[in-house]
Each structure stands twice: as structure tokens, then as C-alpha cells.
Amino acid sequence: MIAAALASSSSTSLLTPPLPSSAPAKPTATAAAESSSAATAAKTVHLKISGKWYDATEWADRHPGGRYVLEWADGFDVTNAFHTIHLFSSRKASDILARLPEADLTLRAAREPVLPPIERVPMASQRPTGMDRFMGAGERVVELLSPPADATPEPVPVAPASGLAWQQRQEGAVGAVGETPLKVACVGETPLKRDLEALLRRHFRSSAEYKATPEHWARIAAAFAVWAGCLAGWVAGSLPATLALPFAQWLLFSPTVHEASHSTLSTAPWVNKAAAFCGLPFVYNPYIWWPQHLLSHHQYTNDDALDVDLHHLRPARLHPGCEVDEGYGGANFIFKGYFSTMGMSVLWPVRVLQQKSTGRWYRNLVTPKPDAVSDAELALSLLPVGCVLLWPWLRMLAGEINALEAFFDWYYPWAVTGAIWTVMTQVSHVQEDCQRPPSGDERDDYFRWQIESALDYSVGSELVPKLTASLSLQSMHHVMPSVCGCHFSALYPEYRAICEAHGVRLNTRKDVSAAWRSCIARVFELSSPERTPAWALREPAADAAESGPLAAVEEHLPLIAYLATPGVVMLACTPLF
Image (cartoon, rainbow, N blue to C red; front, side, top):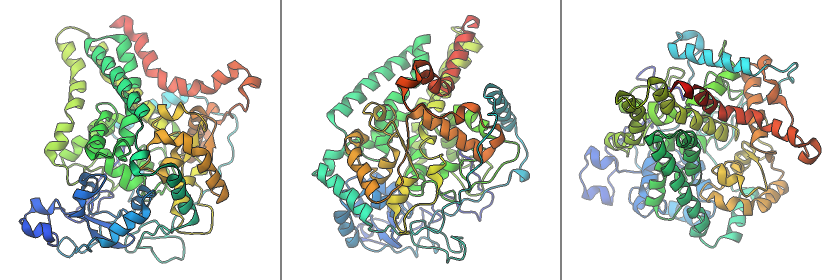
């Protein structure tokens, strides 16, 4: 789970802007016609781009992505997101931006609302909890099932990237050694960026053409039907439907939620906003996910000070810039993955409603909802989650099933969905080659960094992107996030040629199994290298025909075992139901 704690009232939150949303904003033509109440001020939209604050309050209603997208980003530096999202229409977006009035922040707060570097709480200053002991027990079980390799490779020293032109920092923040702290995020107009924009313009005449295709919508309809059937079967107590439910949930999530969070499904904002809820009940709450995914992870990928995704699964260490927590190892990461989506769907939104911290590992890392989303709206979004949490236990109270069956009906969908989520998301960035400093000499080459801090696998496959929410072509998604993933396979050959022409490091793996093994090897290298599982160091076979079918199956066994273990345990217990 993402650990977060506001240790004192003086601490600022990583994702919550220090500017109070209830403070009155500078009157505009629209605001002047309204009252200066807190309700009106909440509608004000101030965005920081390339060091300047803009008042987008009036423009928000005409924003092609919808007003809600700008309202949810109100009060943040969105420099990096502005350049990647508007890659296709960079000139038009820049022209519109130049016409927006400058925001007056004097009535809101004196301090700029930047993302402050994450402040970690050392393990030594904390008292172990019951959850720590539970996770520790699970870690030991994983280690028993994953014997360590006889010899582990020497760790490769990797310096955390810092001092890059696009990284925003607070006053007094530390950049590279001997450098003046950076205050303004800057994305350069590099040849790489211009070639990527030209790539899109060669294939699409308008933004509508790079949204979801009819085939993509057909897959959504089919996935929804499968998911609805499995959910109905789960409600009725069908074992086959229950076993299939988390996979059906992912098949629905894959073509909808991730795309919708980036407004890539449709040019109609309400369609994207509605589709984002297809992650409920078992994946994540969109109100909680959106700020951390777009404002933190996508803007500051693999930046250990600003990318909250690197801290989701502490005490496992996911980046060389993160601290080592003594007594914990990489197996904790594997076990905690079974609980990841329960945190995003249940714990985070509930604690936001309670105005409580979401953990104790950090002084200033929280997982908020956008200020434009009311508590009532967030609470309403929890209804589907509440229903699936209560239903198995209601059946038990009605005498339909016993306590053991109720437990498995309750927990199994969360466990498998969490495992799928952990695999699909973590392999894309927690890799040794994704955490090297950027190549090239241009310090403001943000697009190079986005490509080099991500991993692609199963390159050339048209099926795998459809099953992985296009996360298998992650580097492409990070430099053109407004393009629907259904177009990536067709664009990839030209995209790869552009990367090669500019000397950009393109990190790839043979398939998701190879990516999972190297991800686990990286986590253990950073957390507990002496306990690295032998299977994580296995090199993929170069030619399946030469290695034989058995070797090909063995390559995938670790991943299959991770995803199948909850189901195997459940089936083994069915005689007791």
C-alpha cells in the first residue's frame, strides 16, 4: 500500500497542493459575476506551466478534455503533462496557453504549490504493528517457496537521477551536487520531440482519429459482458465464475480504465470520466488514482523524490534512491502485491474521507482526491466496493455458506486482481535499465527520459497490448499518453526507428514473464540481494524451437504460479465448504 502520513501541521503533502482551495481567487470576468464564496473559489483553475501560473477558469469549459480534467489539476505544476498530452497539437495548445490570463495567487497563498520531495520516516523510529508481522510471515512463506540462487550477480551501482531541467523542486531543494536548486520545470523543444510529433501527424489528421477504434469499443462491450456474467455468477455462489472474476475484471479494465484516465477513449469528456469507473470494484477508485498517476507518476517517472509509485510497496526497495529497511526483503514485495488493489479501492478513499493519513512510512506522502470532488461524490463511488465486501458475509449470515467459503469468496477476487495489477504495473519501470540516468547531452530532453525510464515487452505482438492495457508498450504510452493504445502496434516500427536515430535507449524484454523475472531480480538486488530467487535470474530462451516446449513452459512458471496460487489454495479448501 502507498504509505502516507502527515506527521505535523507544518508538513506539506506530496500530492495535496498547499494552496487552500477554499481561499478566494483573483476575480475574473466569470468570477466577478458570481460571489466570492468558497464554493465559487473551488471552481477556480490555476495551473503552473514552464514557471508561469495561468488562470484557466474560463477556458476550462472549452477544454477538449473536459473541465473536470483541469479542475482535478488545479494548483499544480503540470509542465510535463502539458507537453506530452498535447504532443499532436503542441502549437495550438501553446497558442491557447499564451492567451490565458496570468493567475494571481496572492489571495490564495504565498507559497507555490509544488510537489515537495518525499520525506521518509526511518524504520528505526517506528514500532512494529500487527500488519507488519502478518506481512513478515507472508514474506517468509514466499522465501520458502523461492529458494535463493547459488550465486547472485554483483549489483550495478546506479545514481538516482537529479538536477534535470524538467524536475521541479521547492525552494532550497537539493539537486545534483554543486548545482543551484532548480525552481522551474522545463521541457525542451528537442529534435526527438519534434520527430515524435511528426510521427503522429503522419498518421492522424485530428485528435479524434487517435481515440478508440470501433474494434476497441467492440472489445470493451465483450469484456463488459464477460465481467457482468462472472460477477453475477459470483453473487450466486458459482465457483467457476468466482475463479474467473478477477481475470474478467482485468479484461474490462484493460481497454477502458487506463485509457479513460488519459482521456484516450473518446473526444467526449463524459465518456472518459464514466469509463474510468470500470476499475471498480476490484482495481482502484478513480478519484484517488488520478492525482497520483497523472500528476506524480507520469510527470516524474522513476524520480525517487517525486514519483509516488516507487513507494507503494515499501518496505520493499524499488529504486536506488530509496532507503533500505533492515529486516525486510524483496519477498515482501511479492506478498504485498496480493493486497495492492484492496488498498487502492478501499483503504485510501476511506482514509481520505476520514481525513486520516494512509500510512506511517512518510511524513508528507498522501493519496488525496481532487479538491473539485466532494466528499459525498467520493463516498458514493465506494458503494460498489462496499457491496462486494459485504456480500459473502451476508450469505454466511443467511446460512447459505460457511465462514471458510465466505472468506475465500470475499478475498480471492482481491488477491488475484492485486497480483495481476502488481505484475502489469511494476514490470514497466522497476528495472535496472529503466533506472539509469538519461543518455544524451540535452538536460531538458524530457521525452528521452520518459522513453528510457520505461520498459516494453512482446514488441511486435498485436494481442499482448490488448491484454495488458497497452502497458506492454509503456515507453510509447509515456511520450504520447493522449493516444489510445489500440494504435501503438501500428506506430511502433516508426517509433523505434525514431528512437534509434536519436540514440535513445529503448528498454525491451522478450515477454511479460521475462519482464517479471527481471523486475523481481531488481527488487531483490535493491532490497535483499543475498535472497534473490533462482528463478528470477533465469535468462529467457532465445529460440523456443531450439530450447523445446518444456523449457518454454518453465520460463512462464513463476508468473503462472504467482497468479494461480490464490485459486489453487481456494480449490484445495473446497471440500471444507
